[in-house]
Length: 538
Image (cartoon, rainbow, N blue to C red):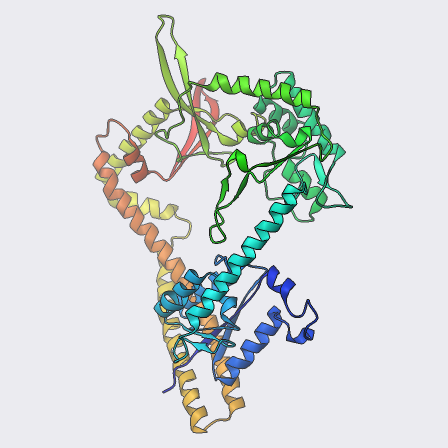
């Protein structure tokens, strides 16, 4: 019996493919171009001619062949893992990718491990055929094309930088790209006014955080928000506030005194897009290419203030991971809490260091948004230790009651609903198997001549549509049951572990990582004349 193939059609088009296509150069008519639509049409016809069921089409429009983190590609892999498709069909090998090593890994290891057949139409390559000899050679040539393209692009960009052309995608805050020449910066008067004010405040001795706080209190749009207001109709999802780091960056940038610094960073290679800094000897500097926002004298004066501030920080203790680092969250804004170490000097001449935690949003915004939510580590250790002891005693006295209480606190936990879900899963499994058997029988009937091609296509598509619907519902139920079972197992595991700490005397990172996911810290309140901190452990 012929195997039933459920084909996933994969189409990809990068910006370079579109620019270099025969269509864009008028060599051939547009209906023969490499567009996504034409790829899809070609693959659809090829699947039909071979009697394969066209299950889904996956598209990545505008993605490089050297990047395998493409949404359509990842969705295709996920469907292959679930068994929704068992054949991957592409126009040619370069559509799958241009990285020789990665393409080979997918065609030789990943796809076979998923039980997926791979077919490249124009290359006449089929993982289940006898024409796979050229696969690695073609993949190597595609990889060479990607490396050559990367080298040429970097060479062109370097030449533009040397000639003094601004090549970054976005203009620095305070500037915009000239309408006449996009490689030239011109002043944006509104933003430039904010930059001048930042420099003036720094000259007056204002700290980075205090400058950020002033701008936030006056509701001045942050650089990200301002850019979106001018250039985009979509909602800004970037930083809504001025931060300590943003102000510091502006006060160190040479662009504001009219000096353009380029080529100070770059990717490691055409395969590794990790951005790294370059030695200063490779930097490209151009002076007076664009108008300065602040005078050279003001910029230099600010640098002296910045340098003096950095010298004052020399000798301070290097930041290290504290006991609760990564486990504390602000109860109001949900930001992680930052760590602070302070030294308190006593009258007798001795000193003692204290560790405290405070809201990250409050710190970054220059104390202008949210509030301190500060709590000292010693106080938190006492509270958490007492809480662990109380839970351990409760589990020792009546473990069943504690486990049942925790189960009820899980929003998605409902024993009756889970029992119904498991029954439905059994029915769906049975129906999916029936549909697959029915489709296989249709293939036999088609090849024996019992039914026509048109009847086969109509019934096969109807079966496949129902099967996909059932599989989707089945996956959702399996995910729900799996989540509930994992949470239940975690509760039982927690109950068993916490009994070990019935007589706990001191906390350490091991205990915290074992028992606590996170702790929400609220602001201090006054209850019956006593200060208290609202906290919620999970």
